[in-house]
Each structure stands twice: as C-alpha cells, then as structure tokens.
Amino acid sequence: MTSEDDPFHDCELDPEAILGTHTFEDVLFTDETETPVNVLTGETPAHSHASVEEAKEFAASIDTETPQIALPASVEAQIETQSKPYTAAAFFHVKATGSLERHRAYHAAYEADAFAVDFEADYESGDLTITVERADES
Image 1 (tube, one colour):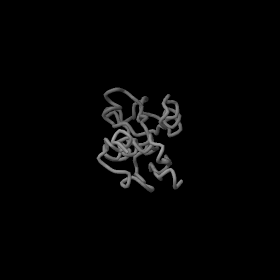
Image 2 (image 1 turned 60 degrees about the horizontal axis):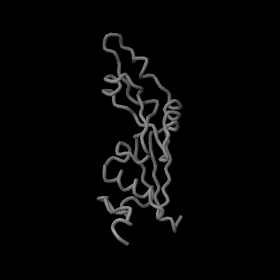
Image 3 (image 1 turned 180 degrees about the horizontal axis):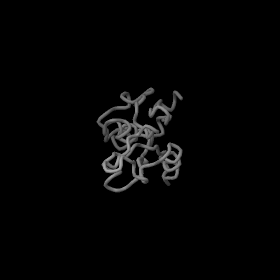
C-alpha cells in the first residue's frame, strides 16, 4: 500500500489510537450551555435563547455528507456576532474530540472504507461517543 492509499498518511495518530469506543464528556450544546448576561439588566439577550431541539435541527439542516452535531458557541462569539449559543460542526470536530490529531484521525477513518465509524450525541449529558471498528470486524 502506497502512502497515497493509506487514509492515515497525513495523520499524526495511527488507527489504533481511535479504534474502539471513546466518550468525550460535556462537549455538546445542552440546556446548561453558558449564555451571556447583560450586566446592566441582568438578562440574557434574545439571540442567546435557544433549545436543544432547535440546536439539533440546525445541525441536521447543514447540507453536507458528514453528519453534524451542535456544539456550544463561546460567550464571546455570542456577544461579538449576536449569534445563537450553538454552532454546528462535523461529529469529529476538534472542539468535540479535544485535539487536532484526533480530529484528523477520526476524519480519515470516516472517509476510509476500511473502517466503520458511528457516533452517539447525548444532548442531555453533553457527551459525544464515537466508535471506530475495522470494517471487516463490524
């Protein structure tokens, strides 16, 4: 197999690092996601009010072949852009997996026929669970 045929040729991690089930805790948008408060009124701005259902629908509406999840937007982003308290990203996004190296490895596995990649987004707990298996084992 040439390096061009290896889906992990540009990755710092090899497949062994992501095989199995990994849970990333408290990374999804939840009802507990921090929102800004106006210091003068003590109220949360209208643009920062959102439900988990709204966030999930937004993530699902993104037109891409890669499944999207709803991640919390930073308070700073909400203030600066007057945006919702969530954003959408691929389920293996660096904000969810915690490192660029994991992001790249999950992306390579997701794109490769040699792996079966599944995920579960638990918006109640905020946890994201990603499972990677070799395709011949699934």
